[in-house]
Amino acid sequence: MLSPRTSWQVTKAVWYALFMREALSRTTGDRFAWFWMLVEPVAMVVVMVYLRGVIAGGRHIAGAEFIPWMLIGLMGFYLFRENLQRSLGAMQGYKGLFAYRQVKSIDPVFVRCFMEGMLKTFILVLFIFAGVLLDIDLIADDPLFALFCWFSLWCLGVGAALTFSAVSELVPEAGKIVRITSMPLLIISGVIFPLNYLPYWIQEYLLLNPIVHGLELLRMAFFENYRHVAGIDMGYLWFWNLGLIAFGLMLHIRFEPRLKAQ
Amino acid sequence: MISIRGLYKRYHKHHGGDWVLKDVNLDIPEGVSVGLIGRNGAGKSTLLRLIGGMDTADKGEIIRDCSVSWPIGLTGGFQGSMTGRQNVKFVARIHGGETHLAEILHKVESFAEIGKAFDEPVKTYSSGMRARLAFGLSLAFDFDVYLSDEATSVGDQVFRQKATKAFKDKVGKASLIIVSHGEGILKQLCQAGILIDKGNVTWFDDINDALDEYHAKNSPPKPPPDKGK
Image: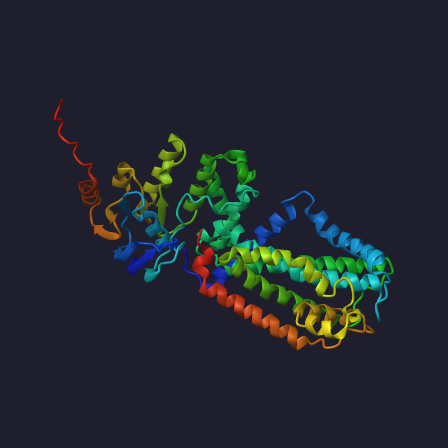
């Protein structure tokens, strides 16, 4: 007889197994998988820098270099967005595995978010290292605070992933809406141009978006003289983080049979 | 021992759904192999999935105080782009087999007999090869109770004989719960039977009684006497 295991032992075994599987299929599934992981953010930065030069004119950011400013913003935004988007497909992608009763519906979401966090952190470190070699100032002025902001943004992604992975499985249309909001979110989160340029009454509305808080805090940690948007609050970001994580967990507990149904 | 208490199950369709299983109360004793009998759509597979914990009941509970396998021959959990070996490792890890991974891999490899294909992506397998791999995988673990949904009906003749033999070898060490339309298999492997008919579930201590009852209920109506022209 197989010896009975505690719930925690089962969960640990499932996470480890899913992680190994995810790592394998992410890095070897496609011949250029590794190549794209590095090139995609670089290509985005190049395109965005060019766009800013042509359309918006001027590259002045108060208290920070333009390219590092944009790179940090893009990486932070991707950290959030990839967590969310990778998890949207998780329920569908793992349907077959729910046949093993040990696998719960939140396991793939956790594992994918963890995987994304690791990859994005690795890539950020790689960029910082490359920046040092190219004499671009990418080293955080307040490294501990930067780590915490990075972690906060990741948590926001986890919360959104937990919530929307369940919602998009229950209401398939929701997944499509989340996917098309990616580009507008990129713009209203102040990734490409600073929100400081906008009139105050618009800023007030944009500050409802927790991603803005996360990105501005991350930039403050990286550039000590950075003139951030007024009204940035770490507490507000964590209010969203905890709210979304709690709501997502509740959805997964309440609707688990329906999420796992074939 | 597996105890089922006041189990209700229905599938939600657009206009509600009838109960597939209605107030099922059963005790499946330890060491007794059971055959599930019933017509297509009677709810045999549903009951098997509920016992295996792959599906949840609307009401009632199932108490398992023994280790229960996933349905043998389940191929849905294989990831096509990964090799047979990687897939086996994955399932072994879920079931806490990390410490004796090599032993499990060896058992599966020697049972499945798919040769070098074991290190090729599963998407290149034929359905027979998939079935061999899935079957070997189930047998590599020592479960108390094995669930099987027509698992012995796949594969070629040689493999079918091998699968049936593997089942027989398990008798004594483990018990089986089988869904099958092959009466030969049921009589060979099972002692007891469960007949499912219109949501009602009846336990028979002898599989032959269950089969007789099934035939009595479902014998085709006698053709009307030929009146001639």
